[in-house]
Image 1 (cartoon, rainbow, N blue to C red):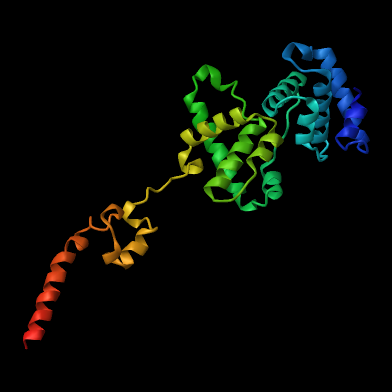
Image 2 (cartoon, rainbow, N blue to C red):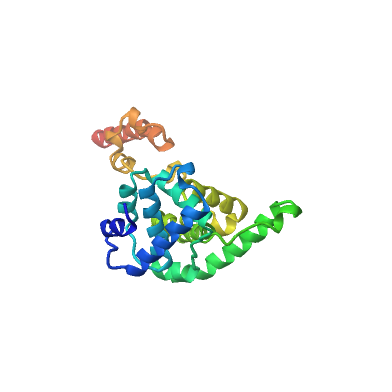
Length: 247
C-alpha cells in the first residue's frame, strides 16, 4: 500500500508536506536497514514513517487509528516505532516549556528543570568514570518522565499515555526511567504517602458511636475503655433511681 493511500486512511491526505516527508523516510529506511528482519511489515513501516513525519512537522496525528491500521498491538507498535526511529537516526525533541503550555502546567517549569539537572548529576555519579562521557540525556523520555513526576508530586493531572506517545517510548521504558528518577532524586520526584492512624479513619463507626447502646460486639462497640464502663454506669443510675423512690 502506498504512503499516500495510508495517509488518506489516517486523515492526512491534505497534508502534502507530511506525505512527502514520510515517503522520503520510507526510502531512507529501505536503504539503511531491512525492516522485515525486526518484524516490521510494509504497511506498518509506512504508518510509522507518517507518524515520524507528522511529529516533526507539528501536524496532529491519530496514533490509535495508526496502531489499528498497522495490524499490531500497541506494545509491538511502540517497539517497532522506536526501532525505526533509532535506525533512521531521528529523535523527537521535547521542550519543557512547550510541554507545560500544552498541558496547562506552566508553574512546573522550574521544578522540572531543577529535577532534570539534579538527576543528571546523581546519575553520572552512580556511573563508573569510564562510562560518564557516553551518558546520553538528550532522549525525550527523560524530559517526559521528569515532567510527569513533577506534575504528580504537585497533584496536577497529566495524560501519561499522551506523554509516552509524544516522546516515542514504551510504557516499560517510561516506568524504568520513573523508578530511576524517584530513587536518585526522591526529594524532587518522590511522593510521601502518609500512613493513616486507624483511630482517625471515619466510616460507619461514626454512626455506631452515636448510639452506643445499639452497638454489637462484632462491630467493635465494646472494645474501647469507654464502652467497658457502660454496665457500671447503668448500675449507678439504677441505684440513684431507687434512692429517689425511697424519698
